Image (cartoon, rainbow, N blue to C red; front, side, top):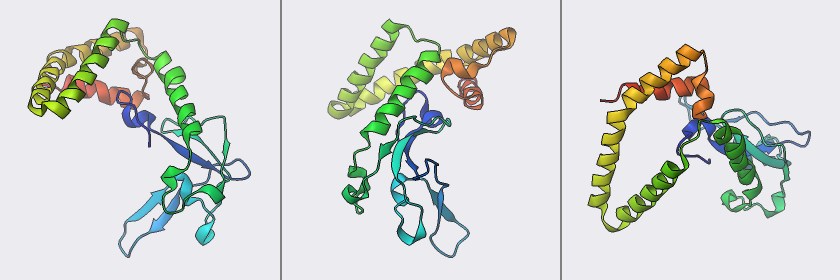
Length: 193
């Protein structure tokens, strides 16, 4: 699974399987015991033809939002290591999903000012270094960031909701999220204290 920090599970990407006819197979159900719990998987490598499973003929990018990549990549089962399928080259689908995030999601979301985006990237890099070298200092920085969010999140969420209601607009696209996820995010920030 591929994720972006900002968009989370709403735009979680994965390698999708395609059958020879170009259709996407249904998730496979695995009964792993006598309990009521069953496991489902749509991992591309489970569609290997073994145990009467469908055989994937190609791969493509898939996103939790429902988007599917247009490009399919032929799957060569002869080169798939059945013990470690993660080593199979899935860079094509990953690149397609990253393009979807950039062109379809981020491009339509409300822009973050460039200088602030640069500053946040620098902060993230510094915190990463601190985590390795000075973990207690990193914790202090994280507490400072949490304080900023708690001080500003409730009002920003309240104002964003009021603007959306006044304009009659959907907040989802502005945040790069489906409507339900965007509402949940606003609620999360409104309730911070």
